[in-house]
Image (tube, rainbow, N blue to C red; front, top):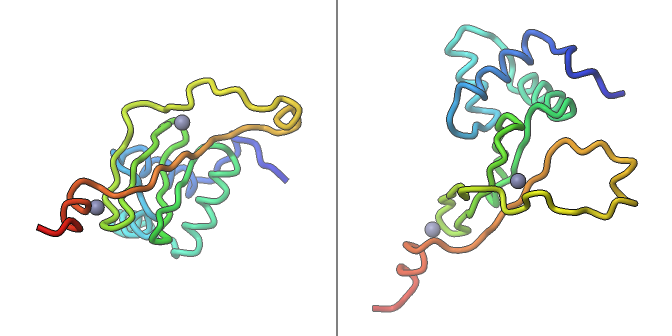
Length: 134
Ligand SMILES: [Zn+2]
Ligand SMILES: [Zn+2]
């Protein structure tokens, strides 16, 4: 069952607030640490559970790195990244290249769209140069 956006628990509000306060993306562990520093005791499992609910409410988005790490941001930050498969360096694109992309309407008409992800993987300049024999 999908809960209504307005029905947010105080803990979910706290998590969302921390994500909004942070200029960068955060992992579940970073969130857990920040909440701990603010004397808000919440187990790591609970943090992940609330993050999942916030995703289902369409308030938080996530992306997966090749390292298996998951990064969370508020859903209104429509950022996409170039990520280096060697050193893991990640660079935000200046704008969302998808814009108002058209999707097959017969497939999306019965689907409530919340957010999208788009990732690009490759090798950064430093890693390319390191691999070239001098
Ligand atoms: Zn690199
Ligand atoms: Zn986008």
